[in-house]
Length: 293
Image (cartoon, rainbow, N blue to C red; front, side, top):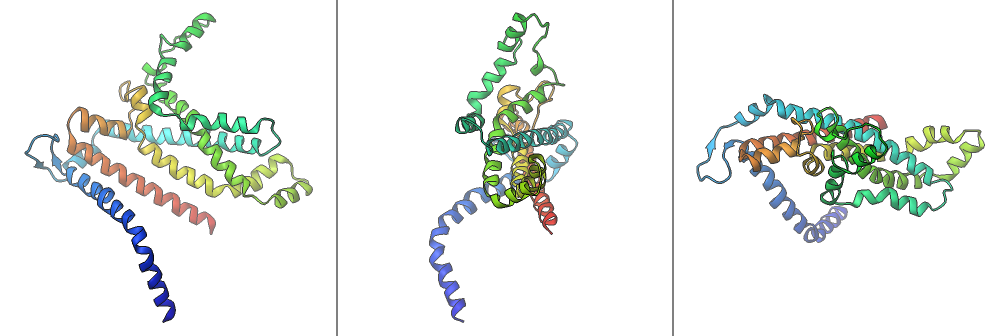
């Protein structure tokens, strides 16, 4: 009985501290979600006083919209490529910098700096770099290579340019998380493996990588959610073109809701994006728990 009273007293003492955050989350975030769902049942441009209720027709429209499915496909390809490459590079960089490397602090800074750069300042540089009148084209012309830099204007290459930019930007995040995870591995276990005759590559695969599993799962969840809500880099570099080759759900929502004033349709896609993010997070969490058993 005393334990129950103590726990209840502890909860009441902590309630005033969590109440502001609870009010903020419930009053702003959850209200916004429910309001977005309400908007998704309307045919409304956001300005007219007349709002026409259309039920679930906006969702039916999205499921038959080829641009919506193109955005889903781009998101899947984007996530798979960027997740595999940037986490592979981040893991390798972390392993290298855990060895005796000169100027390790400088290398860490150089790897992590792209992560803190604002997309608004970074995207114009890459757009100019890959422009037919840009710096890369000038370099190829100087070397007389006969290569024309029009990759952002070609549907078969524009998406891969965005992947390259994203990998360059966020490899530093993967690196810093893997580096922190490797710092928690018991050094005595690594030394014992080395004394037993295991080589560095064997230790890396059999001991270091399994001990970084939780970090990989966290990066996978962040990568999926980040891919689903990708907007800034594609919009600033290609605006979703050419021919929707770099269209993502975020850019399509912006175009439908702001540019074309189809607010109800944009809200429906937003709700579907939220459901996709929740489902992916649940699946990854269950897969992680299943692997631990």
